[in-house]
Amino acid sequence: MTPAELFLHADAALREVIDQIDPADFTAPVPAEWSQLESPTLLGVLGRHAYDEAWVPDVIAGHAAADGDPFADADLLGDDPIASYDSLNDAAAAAVRSGLTAETFRFTYGDYPAAEGFAHLATYRAFQAWVIAKHFGIPFHLSPELIAGLNEHVTPHADEWRQWGVFPPAIEPPADADDETRLLCAVGFWIP
Image 1 (spheres, rainbow, N blue to C red):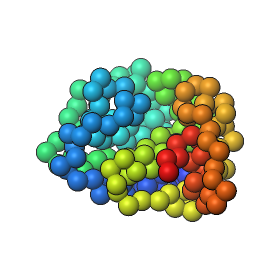
Image 2 (image 1 turned 180 degrees about the vertical axis):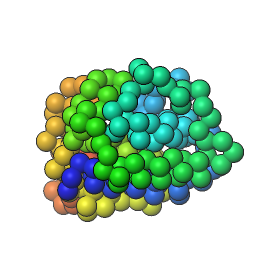
Image 3 (image 1 turned 60 degrees about the horizontal axis):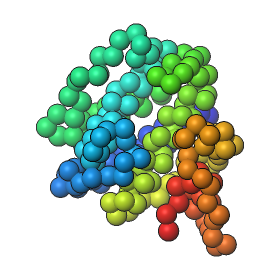
Image 4 (image 1 turned 60 degrees about the vertical axis):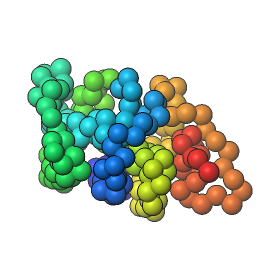
């Protein structure tokens, strides 16, 4: 699986979960570690994902927030947050599918080769999809393709990225663990 394909699978997984969110849960608090917001709610986390999706076309084109941030104060969710997110998700996926990708992605935390940049973007989406679904009781599993892609492009970096605070400590998987559980344990996100 290419890094761009990994991104597309992860982006689709997050959308699958977001599309199942009950708007009545928008004001529900979420764990503080999900966001840098002072009092994070599900809607606040959705807003951060919308912001991230809005940036994908520019990031993969080699632009950075340091060049100017047109989304900083924009209301990206509007009156229909899920539909608004879906539109941004569509635009991000279309940009990735175009194949027009810079050699370097310029994130706020540093510059990375495109392959690693796609892995960073996929990591955020895939594991947020899983934890949001788990927290809110949304039926969801990472697809076999996404699991394979994450094992190829992300798991080999888990210990290094753990040192940066991306992942919590690894968890010993249960003896009867399936592929999804083993992956989630390797990156410290598994919750029984």
